[in-house]
Length: 141
Image (cartoon, rainbow, N blue to C red; front, side, top):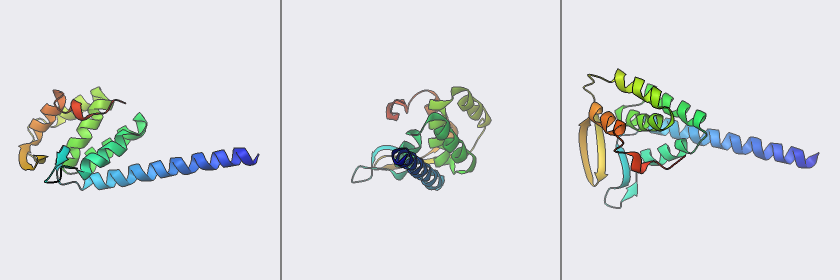
């Protein structure tokens, strides 16, 4: 009986910690200021947005999709770009719906590649995601 209680407690605690990590990553990503994958800046560090993306992406599909949906609904365009990438990986039909809803958007996204910051139209980033330009950064599920 003690062993069962220990196993259940460990399972509950690990689930709670995972949910906290996802919740923290969702909140952090909502405030991201740049859409970046790969090493960025002079030190070639992984961006906080990519780190948060990876935490969310590592969860079971339903949890990850829910996190990305929250980010798309409440984040800035940089956060929405990460969310679109995650949603495309998890639910292609939903991605197409969101892509369609962006038609005519005049919003801009700040991106970073290496040490270079640029602004692109949100539609251009969404189209690049749709075409698979960012698939190389996705880890297989």
